[in-house]
Image (tube, rainbow, N blue to C red; front, side, top):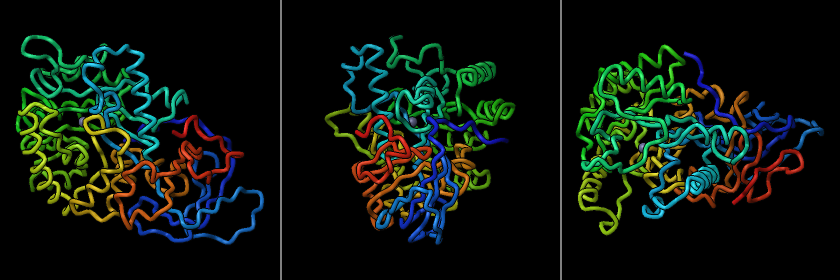
Length: 434
Ligand SMILES: [Zn+2]
């Protein structure tokens, strides 16, 4: 199985920049290096480690004493096309252009929060990924699933009892799979449409009105069929929306690459995930977020309270084991642009700050099969970096506020630089620093 297609951003000039004096948390899980040196040549890192003694006057040197350098973060579970903060009535009145521009704003906000790569797990078409690659908008490198598959009446069947649609479908895509042939056809259509991952719902959900996280959605034999289809191609990861215990087991027995949410994962599920090398993406930013009872229907409030408590209990246990965890927020279901709040939640449920950072860097890159190019600050990798004025190992919750992420580098190019660290004469800054 090869490496995945690298999601692109525009290229930089082939200049060399030497960053010296920072504390380096390289994303591999290793402890920090104080007084580090990182050399960026074009869009890649050519050296990262302890500071060396060199006298090369031809390079641009940037003094980062007192600052911390980390890899650009990777959010493995977002929905750019959804926005929990948007007014539903206003959404219905929107022109297509307004919706697209709102999504572009959400994409930019996510980059400004320190997230340089995302995986969008439904609701977004490949036009956004390709616009980012072309430099039309600034945004994270992007993998996408396009839509999530479920059976009739399942998590992504938006048809209401009266036949009306609760949500409009992405143009041209039907997410319903009931038979073996449906499974093959839908998966092939998604591949044709440029999907980097396949998302399958093996359980119901908290927010869907007609099912619950304990309901089984797509069964194990259909999950296995999807994995087989993907293994005939580039082996794109298969991600399962799976919340209840039994649906988690069906997803794992079917061979998925990741359990998304995993709120009621039990000891058997954890052992299966560990044995198979599957990741858990606990999406605590949305799991632990409780709405005001005034803002949502009573059934939803009651479900949220129940499943938030289940998630807290089970994910706390999961974080004590060797199961591989990748950072994912479910942004869209929770507010966009505060993605690194997730790191604080992982620490709240038992991880060390360093393990939380690794979940958002190396582990997420490995899940996306981009670890040859992204996820750590190492020679040969793409130069996607986050630079802060403080040590996040002292208080990981500071990263949650995008104002505490003053500098974001993507492919050697500053896309956010509030402190003017980056030499603007050698590498062009991005289009916007808002
Ligand atoms: Zn989601």
